[in-house]
Length: 446
Image (cartoon, rainbow, N blue to C red):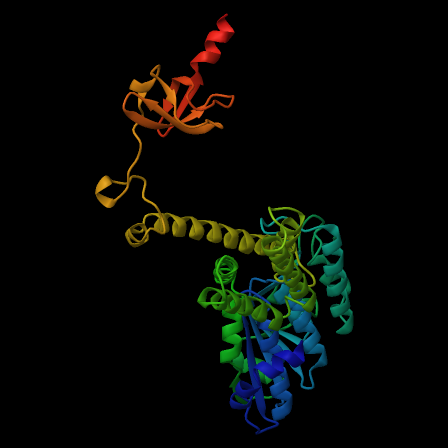
């Protein structure tokens, strides 16, 4: 995945590379807002560029409420591989995934008044996640603490409120450390400001270079945004649906493929989607195509195709270590896309049936037609009910009857009636006049 990402942003990396100066250069990397999958490639790039430029250190300036566990895992892995010393500067808040990222650094520096902790994974409603997820997070935090020679029980207490540590936290309370508490327990060092950070790491007066998100990363993060993703999906689905019902391949199909390519491409680059997700969606589209073009009606192929497409889209958003919150977010994106497709299709059909040009062209028939426009309709001849006449053609069962001087199309009630037989009209329904042979009625009565 790293190779794919590097290929896409190679040009921008060269333009934004950290200047080679020095052993006295510090790269400051912001870790702000939610920790999401788009943040991981940015930090990976910043660490690689810092090492290439020969920077003395990288400082992650953390101000985050937390975010995705899989994104934090990817960031901590990048920090462990870094060829340059990495420090964490907690500038007010490092909750949840932010605390995990901070503990993966060589040293944690906390501004006065900052806090760090509350790492319990939760679902979309803020409820504690399953024991499986909590156990995995607890083990990960313990491993990070052990790697730095810290008390692992402190890190575990940030994840599980059931753990009690005498003099630190009571049972039933989740641990979140203030700057003073973290310093007392050896988890952090106190600094006043950014200059204090440079002084603490022995690089006072060093040149500071701020790492910035490049154009490619901005685009990818934009298209993976939960607000934008539903629109890409809905445009993609609508474009393909229109194309399926059209001859050839046109603008709608191209727009649909482009939208789906942007959706899956962006999620593939940030590490959410994998090749298996694309294969599942591709199989689903093939099954739907079989249902539409080869198999009449709507059956097994259509159902399996729809399930495969929706399943692939859902899996492309959840990553490798999804929490309940991630699952809820993916479900929300998929539901919003489905609603947009149905609403858009409904408005399209409404506007199409109300189109004056389509009515005038005859593509769609209006609800009423006038004689002035060349249309004629049959009046209901209730006055003909009970009228008697003669069949002037064989009625098998349809034919022509003569009633006085008027010829009318008629249909026999049941049996065939030969030419010349007396008939009576039983009912009149527009063009349809149902008749019965009079002779047959007389015979039955006898």
